[in-house]
Length: 569
Image (cartoon, rainbow, N blue to C red; front, side, top):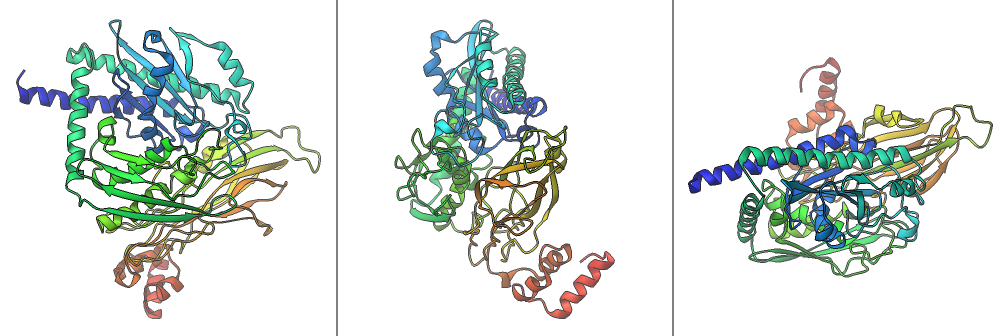
């Protein structure tokens, strides 16, 4: 086979591998029990060579999962031992420091054998609704309180499932059927990937993956280094302050561009928090790499080689490099602010490329429902755990508005109301876009959303709030204005905190407003037709159209009249 035809064949096989892991991920979506996986896509899947280097990842999934999982298979190989790897094995862990950052993510690895020889590995991870302990939330003072820890071990040994492990898991979690179902779904999706890989190897006459692995890694490395080499050799700093749990947290970063790598250093960042919002380095690294990769090389597929030139450093015992046994359940809150902090520095090196700040972390909450205790409860009242993922607005981009109610950087989808209410006796009374929440600018920030949540008759509940930007809204870039802040309270006006478990009595609702993304560029430079369109759609109020964007009273009347008639603006 000639050099050109061999290159074409390798490119076809590379694309095929990406399709294989995407089918692997979709199998997990279809078979998972948890709504966070089925509806929100909070998962990842990938294929690895025999050394544990990631060759391809699924498009479906989150950067925090897949970039953290890029290093995970090597962590599995060491304790399992190469001599102990056998056909039919499946390995499992939820170790925050060797997995994806907290106990609520289960990672499973399956060795792939072809004709009796180990040719690679498949791995996947997914967020599960409960792992015992205090439940999903920031209230713990150490990781020991946050739930059941599963060390790297065999879930299945040569095809035989460890039933003792399953009994231990069942005995320690609130939703045993759901969790065990998710574990089997994770194992099954790896098996799907393995089957498709073997089909590919037979089709292309491969005995191993060494040739295609070398092709993928070498081309990805070279392409990424070319992008880095084209950047200015400069260093810049960025900083962000966020709410924290009881006291604000400062994230500081220095980004330095070298000829063959970019180093991101978090020296000066706040120390470890007493509550569970700390972030292991593996998760910080995942989002710091993601921020730079999407800025300079978004079309280069994710694999070990394309991630390797992005180096991340952070002092131990800072909130972005929390050391065991720090509580880390809500590590995503800090981790999701890492990209905007990195962007603040990178914007000084390459102006006009990165967006304004957005909502950042997901607007998650978990509802723990139970029969009411202030009066006799109906016989059909239930205990249930319901987790729902929601989003504020993303920051405006240099050439485009921010996206409404869209999770950036995680990419996790907002859960439909129907799926949330199906999971337990919870009622979502309101879920709609929040006007005026996107920061004004030449490009407007994305809108946040309103939500109201309550319980069915006969139930009370605890709500685990996992919010930020109550006191520190998203900041605009290049003259853009800030987005709106987060608010949370009961429907009788009782104030609530942005984080932590809080009791909600029978008959009460929780009223929430999620933050908007910030604007990019000065509002006076926004196209007048874009302002009129926003007004007609209800994205901005007449007052904002007038004070921030300069529309006259007559223009506002004309727009609103046309909108009422259903005319195009």
